Image 1 (cartoon, rainbow, N blue to C red):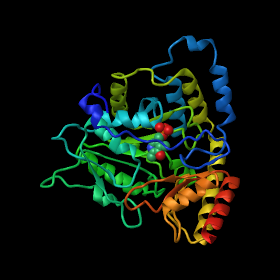
Image 2: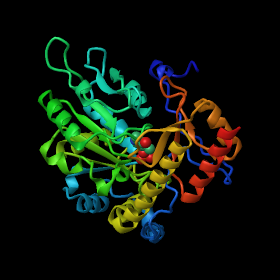
Image 3: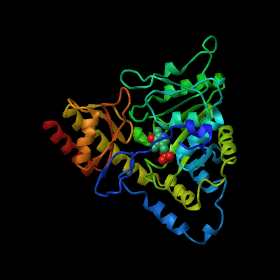
Length: 368
Ligand SMILES: *Cc1c(COP(=O)(O)O)cnc(C)c1O
């Protein structure tokens, strides 16, 4: 605390990112990074871009990237927004589409979800209400449909699909029915598709293909997880042109050049190389499903995951105990000390070799 902070900053409780240990020996399964390298085409594009061109500002319209993403997703470039990580886009989206102030209607998101959402809501002074996940940790879409009238409406809805840190997905039908419901109330639905690539047949559950039917539906994507580019800091959103324009208005009231030339070049190469990424995604999915089966055999509760991580509860010992025991064996996972999930750990999917080490460690810990 400092007397030099303004009252708004004093009230914030900022997001705490997962640890990035200096020790390279550690098996790092705590922030859902991809265990495989980025596409060689991305590395080559960035190397070629690192030259005299850096003298100039990057393209504020991000045209090359937007065209590449539009071609890949079958949308128009004007329906694509690029940002410095999807976190930045989420921050802009809260500011662009949700009303702030005491009198504003509450926005809704799950009680167990990405912990950045309440941080953005507080930053922008947007009132919010959390909706409890069902007993099986799934999102019950009906809970988000608050009718007009006595109880009022909500101010908008946001959740990840698949959800984090549970990995549990909702169906596309559910998402579209909520989008339709909210559209009548002139409210925005933001679906954070950070992990959608891992949800099965290429983007089967993605809402991207439905944006032309739902002007209030914004899908948010990141290259950090499925494209193995967490270090590049690149995210993008796909939605109706007017939503994209709203995001641009916030960005251009803040920093018109949030993306540097190297990132823009690498990102365009990444979204264009579907063959490489489909292959590593399939590998991660196969490793995930094998690991889930093996952990269930050890007596773990494993939530059905559509993401590149597993949310697991060990038998007999607590989440904190397993976290510490894995840590002692050089394996870093994520533990959330929070109601309902304190006995769970989120384990990112690494290579088969990494996951064999995890399984071996769990066997050993459980037999003690
Ligand atoms: C990792 C993650 C993000 C952030 O992605 P960046 O593009 O790295 O900022 C956003 N939403 C969810 C649900 C995530 O897990």
